[in-house]
Length: 209
Image: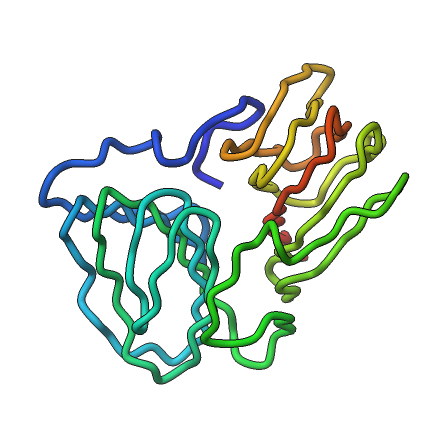
């Protein structure tokens, strides 16, 4: 995961957006970040795997759908697909192998924070994609709820969708809120504690054994 680990960050600040430029940055083998200046585009191409797009910032068009911050869409294989930006935008592309487990309708725009619900005194969890190489899940924490210290087998990107929480990694605490991100480093102990009702997306990269 080629992002700074253990600190609260904003992915859209990791590369400056430049007028007239599109920039791509590989985070993992199957995960790319695209930085698109206003009125730029990535030309339509034909892909043979499923593609999943998540918008961190801006306003873009993908296969005829308008997506803004917090939106996600799945695109079927063998679909002509490009990205057109209407303002400075940051988009994550995840390649998903055919036949992997995907739990959201294909070709429809979703606002991720609306796809998982709070429950009193509980944590709810919804798997969006679960493959042999990664897991993308949504979690909703009632106020005061949390995950005790544990370690993950791979790097994990937390995307705060709503509310506030305290994230701890290797004994250091950081406060995160909707619109910011955090990377848990592989093998280091970490925890999550909701300050308010809190929703997040978690992208865990599984290490091959």
